[in-house]
Length: 371
Image (cartoon, rainbow, N blue to C red; front, side):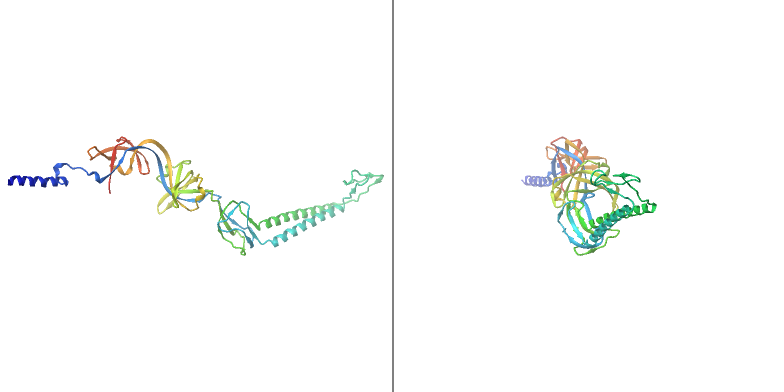
């Protein structure tokens, strides 16, 4: 009886140890609960490059509007956030002195014109044909010895000095006209207009201030066209060789994390940007999205640039692949619940997915070791 009780005690103890996983002859297996399982499935994937960047106005879409003449700002018609159209008046500089210069130049032109007329009349005898000289209102310049109604014309002689006086008066008239045009141009500078359509981003000069135009024009306002934007994406030097003009790009901004904006690669700047010994290249993304008005300059972007698309390929999670030297393997779940180590070959990588070139079949289950 004692032997039977002892045997039962030993059997119960050994069974408990075996179920606890501590007895070697029951075989060494991995617990299923130690793994997260994912299926091998077919999917369309794209090779892509991830980059960060920012929204910027394209060249010519941000303009600083300044003054070409000095003077006091009489009126300022713009404020931050205002929408302006091309050629709309933004500001006016005091222009009474410029208007006076235009009036003076006009008077000089009239005086010069009169001077030319006097000089010509001094030696160009002209007959106004009112009767026998032809059509009424015509002016005829006679020659020496011409006969009109039996009267012989006798013209006074003139010398080169008289001709010089006429030319001098004509030159003065031309100079007066040029001075008038210049004064009108200077007057036009007193009215400052918008060179592009857009939104006032900043105002640098206030009404009543006096501006001095020198080598650098004083800035009144900065205008940005908010529908002419681009993304400057900073791509690592290890990836820049795979980026080509025309490739599709998607990007998000922090303020709209669930919305993707569409674009394409427009240009790749040849000069690298080096910051803290990290080499990046500026890739310009042209925005081709109907919701571009939601964007603002200097917004931070997360950019994905797509190289190629593969349809209907087997994929698994990248986290399921383990490397040992030059080989890659995964743990494939068996019908018994255990995991078998299997070597595979991989292809294209897309985000968290990796293409399986060989070694797995659709529907098989692979395990990812839990942390």
